Length: 157
Image (cartoon, rainbow, N blue to C red; front, side, top):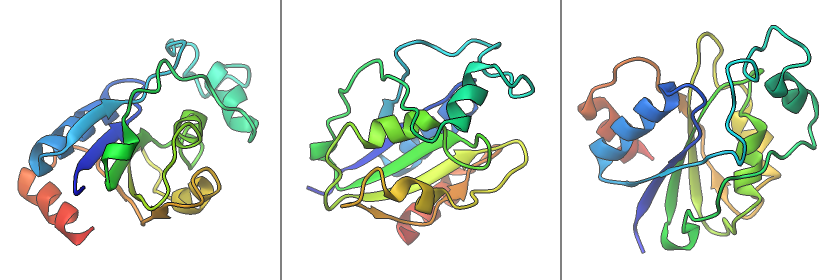
């Protein structure tokens, strides 16, 4: 078993583009992490304290429901895990995803898209959701990235 999966959550399409480019560059399978209830534009308005995303991120125990649990994690050794940065970390749905599967002995490499923040302490923030996995330091995949750059990053992992 030496297969690689690129699993991602994308609220607006930006992370989906990065995930698709990464999967294509490294020959990995692609899986979209989808919420049971899709996020609306109003849900994503981080300027509003009562928006869905704001409420979720203020509650560390929040775990939004997933649309499915068909990722087939058991088939993969290495999982690149993509998401937009929300409130300087991964959205809560990423913890829902990690807590829905057995990641024992898996390697997880986070990647994110962001309008301005860095990766911060994402690896440490996610560790409790998959304690038997190895979570590596991630990186931002903003903008248009060449396949050569994506392959080089993959080889470093």
